[in-house]
Amino acid sequence: MLKGRGMFLMLAGWMISLAMLCGMKLEAAASGTKDYLDSLNVGISNVIEPGADGNEEAIEALTQIVEEAEKEKSDLVMADVQVALNVRAEASEESEKVGLLYKDCGGKILERKDGWTKLQSGELVGWASDEFLLFEDEAEELAGEVGNLIILNEAETLRVRQEPDTDSEVLGLLAQNDALNVVEVMDDEWIKVDFFHDDAYVLAEFVEVDFHIDAGETMEVIRQREAEAEEARKKAMQDANQAVITDADDLRLLAALIYCEAGSESYQGQLAVGAVVMNRVRSGAYPNTISGVIYASGQFTPAMNGKVARIYNTDIAPSCYTAAQEAMAGVSNVGGATHFRRAGNHEGILIDNQVFW
Image 1 (cartoon, one colour):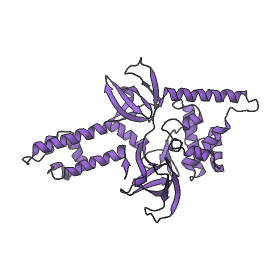
Image 2 (tube, helix red, strand yellow):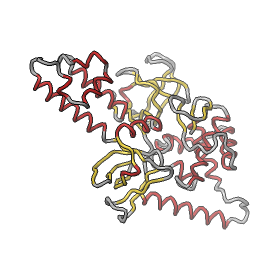
Image 3 (cartoon, helix red, strand yellow):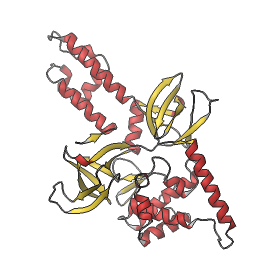
Image 4 (cartoon, one colour):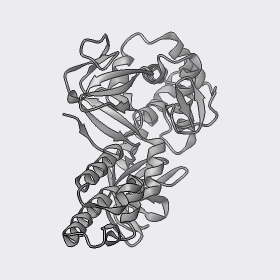
């Protein structure tokens, strides 16, 4: 059975609620779903047909549905900053900083008071000033631009097929907890996914569908990463034979991520992914090491599900190594872009099947 969460499936819930009301003789029903939903906001009693039997019951039922839907809709919050937003233990500027919410990161609202919002973003829980947050329609619009639906494999092994048919050719296998971007939820049985930038299909009963938005980081995670980076820097400086302070492991790690994100793309597509990582390293809005950027909480799906670690220990395509080397040397074919996703409705620099911004 398909288990979905997030904005996409939240909208499906709205549609189910509408279907339950089809027998209530609503005047707005003829004007379409969007107009009907808009009409709910100006007064439920106005959309009930005058003189219809059971108006009180209908109004009560509608009120409950709208309240529940609005509550779910209002749970989303997005950061509205160019760099990063401080998240604090309490609703005060003087309170201890417990983490950072980066540009285009989002989370769930837990509580609101006095111009502050308590939110959860990945492992980060704390208070942020409403001045630097987006809510409701604005949050949904931004989430739709920077987020994406993913599937997480819950089975031990899952076949990825060429067509939505159990007799179709198997293109590959997913290990448990592997993730892929969703192209389309076909029905209750099949989901179309992005498999190395080609369309493929998986059985819905073995996966969980989630809406993925980049998450913030706790100060504990940030301090630990910074400490590890400092140790690596000291070690590099002590190596008299090392002309440039660059850990060879970082090169392999970046090449592994490039392979996971753009292994089937052209060299320009691979270089673009590497450039995004290095742009983040240099930006100040993200961790200042390659490993820190790649493994930052809730950022890159292949790192999140362990695929990068598995590829790291295999033979990585030479072109991915070359792209990693060029990107680390400062070459960028996407300017200062810090994000990318499968080409769709987001504006940016289009390279192969991905858009960079």
